[in-house]
Length: 334
Image 1 (cartoon, rainbow, N blue to C red):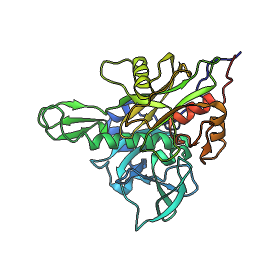
Image 2: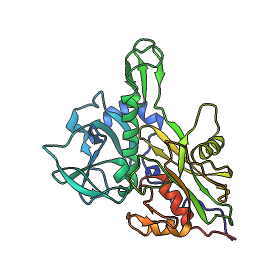
Image 3: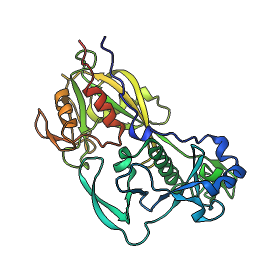
């Protein structure tokens, strides 16, 4: 029996095996004692981390290389299989050279290489990491981004100090405590009302994107707004379409800089004209399932669209790609 499509796999950045429960980071004696066997993930100024060429695990460092105890800027990431993991700022040893790799959009890009290590970006390389590494990298980037913006108190402007090994801050002037912020954003795959899963999907592109890049629509949740209402508003604002049958699919952290993407599906009438938001959406169109499947089979290359032009799918680290994959290969239903 045909059913509404669901995500066929976890989104790339939702894969995590690490235990990071609060009781671990609020036990300083335990963490300091276990520092001698801990591993450290380095993040450079552009939030890249080293991975040995041809491998899918992070090239972590032994914690004792950085002292007998955790440095003040060390961020605790969690524990996995008896090992504690931390993050620290770091740069490649020596002068790196730029080498070409295939990024998340399927195009060649140049990244630093030092010795046998590639210093990779989470958005471009996250899908090539194992579950443990993807989870650690995502958490490390989210925490580092938050601390970059949490140096001063939002109440009085005083300097803050870190608590719980990076999982909180406290103002040195007024004592206000704050915890890592995550901004909720919806991302919705809208399909037409033909059959159970539709025959066309609504895709759009922003003018700043590379040529041919299309994706499903997304936007931030506003204050006092439910997730379902946000879906309805964003699709109306960005493409002029009215949606119904809004249902939840799954989620993915998106630390660029501090979001979580909440995935939904919805229906809309494909016979009604679309009105892309001026200055925000360059093009919005209904794309048949066959075109989306062809794009998946195109190995990152731009494929022709039935209505003219070409299309490149969302990057492999994005939940948008997992949503489109699930829809493209679902039974359309009668």
